[in-house]
Image (cartoon, rainbow, N blue to C red):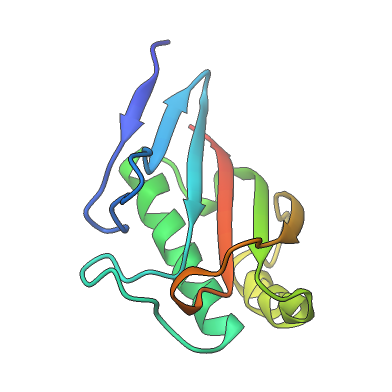
Length: 126
């Protein structure tokens, strides 16, 4: 199976030259998504819950463009600007993954562009 680049206008465009997602080896690798509005490029929300929601909306759009969905997510990596935001991020996360959530790991965001509180990347089954 050849590698396929995934792109949708329903998720933010990359300003740094990376693909929104790549389908390969039966999986979809979604690049880290910040809480950006696809139409304006602006950060959506001031709370960690609002920003987490926007990240997951962007991921959902990319997965759907690749013919997959959030319920096929097998792994996620989240990066927080502030570790104390974990509880709020997790509160919103659990709304999107109430059952059989993907494996997950996190770290601290070294750089905080545009008041971004969170970034999330996902690997899902194709």
